[in-house]
Image (cartoon, rainbow, N blue to C red):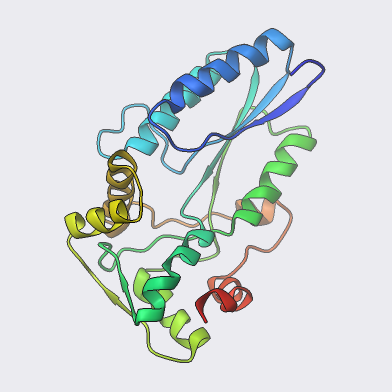
Length: 224
């Protein structure tokens, strides 16, 4: 990071995320970096007991706040791009997800990128936390309804037991640690924990947030 003034810290979710990000923070301090924009997660909390991704990101946020660096936290919610991974289920006619009627404001990762770009290239974002969401909260049943329209055939949501969902994830090659983390997120979604909408994409990213309908129409080919 020699010669770098501002940096984006974005780490894949992993059991050693805190170690990786702490090492990055120390290296940034040593190199004289002035400002780090951390890609975190909505509801990041170092004391979270029921969602490991929130806990480890909260711990990493704490490490960054306690460093000598200026910081900005990006705290996005569920990604619309993750819905593309539902394609196999959608083609079978059902989304098997343990989420009940829970709702969350899924966000296009390109909208997150717009916020990140602003935070990295403009002054005045230091010391700010930005919760980044899509324009409205939706349930998996809502997603199924939009997919039905896009695909021209019925797609429904089937609420399945968490253990069944976990085993299905592991069967795809996902580690048990990560599958448990996804199940924790789904439990939070089912409980309504993420059902809040912000205008961050519009006010900081300077663009209109992508709607679920527009996103799925754009990527209709994935579901054919």
